[in-house]
Image 1 (cartoon, helix red, strand yellow):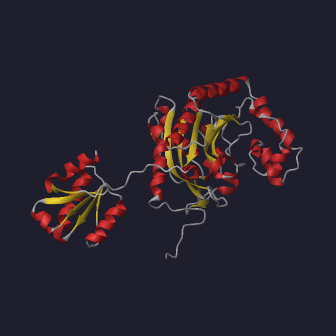
Image 2: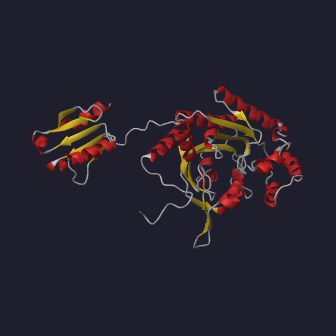
Image 3: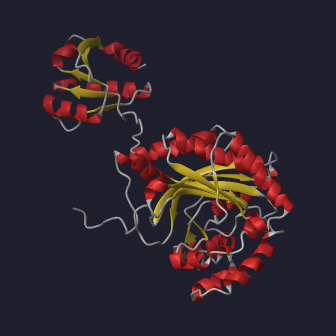
Length: 419
């Protein structure tokens, strides 16, 4: 056994379970690729200021959970705790917003890092697929992203998830609500850290999961009562478009999300089979984030869906994905046939057929065990006598039927049978 183990709160993806994670990433990204979103990839670490400005110093992510480091040159860096700020920074640096045709529609997939108490569904290293539509203020974009996430989850076979929807207002109406909420919070019996948070960003207190805090929040002013006419109209249009698409959602007036940059539309995808870590993804509109990190005004909206929690949700529902075998043809070489079958395997691979061969000089019994373990549909078996006759034995691993096939015809025969 190795002396080293994966750090606490992290995990290794190993076959065969890793195939499920890949399938989930593909399913989530597929509707995005079909809707005008281009792929973006950013570094695993960024300048600390990018997150402290964008995500917000009052958030747990910045104040408690970021992994930070100082380089030999004295730069302050952080492992990325979320994707939106990094993607927006990359889009601005690449001047994508100046190329015309706003919004810039991007999708991404990667690992993120937060120092949290490790538990089921909450890791210090986790994987997300995200989408951002940058540079346009349009309820149809908000609705589009909600609908695409719903489509992705349903394509995986998930059914027991719910979509929570709220509006956080904008720079016109939220300050009025902020003052009313702060006045209410000042009358509560809160610990010093929560009092400090209430002064920096009181909406974050609404997101506090502690029962003693939630109990005191009964009767707190609701943001819906403070929305300006423009925000009300915007939110109603988002709701109408999502409803017209046949996507069900629940209005949740307490939904805040854990990041400071959200404005207007905010939403969350929750799965009741995951216990306390029920959120499998979420997002919203962040119209002021570009300016917060030094860019021009670029109203934007996006989401991130957790690959890890989506896999847990599939397991909670008992959904087994139909993942094709990684190998279609497995070659078993006997005697001096190894070089010939190795060449045949290479031909099959070049023709687009997933193929493998038994290694290590195993006999027929051991090599056929390898073939069975591979999940291949066909085995190609050949020994010295077969090669003298210019054939190989093509065995159907499902029916057990075995037929001789001319060596020159193997690739075409396999392709025809697999089709």
